[in-house]
Image 1 (tube, rainbow, N blue to C red):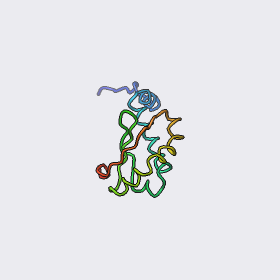
Image 2 (cartoon, helix red, strand yellow):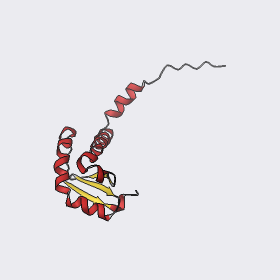
Image 3 (cartoon, rainbow, N blue to C red):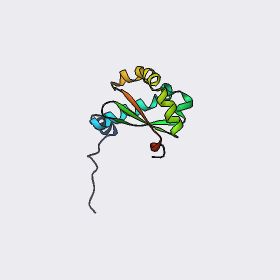
Image 4 (cartoon, rainbow, N blue to C red):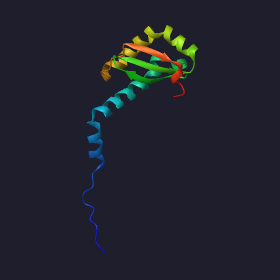
Length: 108
């Protein structure tokens, strides 16, 4: 029987380092961190009925809403939400210029 030598193991640390160097992974982590602050910007009541869906080029953040009524309420509060979001955006080096509220994305 042939003896198998397992000497070319890759450590978990080196794999994580390699992944964190990739631009796509960095962007995904940054967006994930940004999405965590949605409740603080929108408020608890609206955070339960909406959630960040995606970040489009040009700094447009798409928010999935439970229904059209929530989307309309959030649209009316858009300026206030953007102001509350600003302190969380600077450390992440992300620019969000506009919010788009879409009830069609809720189930997606």
